[in-house]
Length: 256
Ligand code: COA
Image: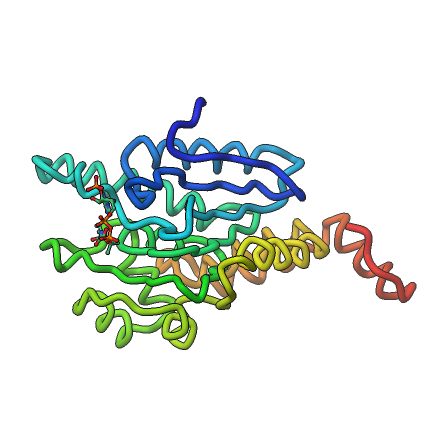
């Protein structure tokens, strides 16, 4: 696929995916969502890629939301299809077997915050601002925000953020648990890469299994405890487990 709205660069075993519509503050239109899905699929199947960083082009915005222009004149059926497309992308990222970090370089609003929320880890620049302002448009979040924000910060804070539609700064977002870490803008990509490098030094199969089991905790249709028991047991059959135990016994670093 030839990308018009994003860039995909593979370096240091990481797929760096940059949403690249700076003049529209990287708003997610339909084409951008399709390109993101393609890039995530590519990163998933490329064995040289061990993890992903998602970020926005420029210094102003990560993603300032779904593209509001595309809302104009949409029927309820079309709106449902549009929401479903966003959900498909966000679910794909949330359930990816490789770690995904959102490097939030500026405004992460509406669908932009929802994109960050579906990533496994969020690092924000100190200058970033985040919010779900949909109620000011007569809408509610439609790409998983009502669920994922609530999972992260609890019902009380999620209600406050979504009902007021207010933006929060990076420090408040950190204190509330929306983001894992706040750094200066110039340190953002390096910080995300450092976290990925740490994860790459661990067992990739165990990392995938952990993502699966943690995600199960949020799925009301799955017995998360049961899945953890099965997934834990499956690790015993892996080469990485053999290597991890040998390394521990031989008092050396594991070679995964
Ligand atoms: N969808 C489509 N276009 C968007 C957009 C979005 N979500 N967010 C910003 N843009 C566009 C603007 O329309 C403008 O385009 P133009 O130059 O062709 O008019 C351009 O990006 C720059 O935005 P602008 O509003 O001029 O920048 P600003 O610095 O004055 O304000 C924001 C920045 C983020 C506060 C403001 O753009 C904003 O409120 N955006 C919408 C946020 C939102 O409601 N997101 C949820 C959508 S569900």
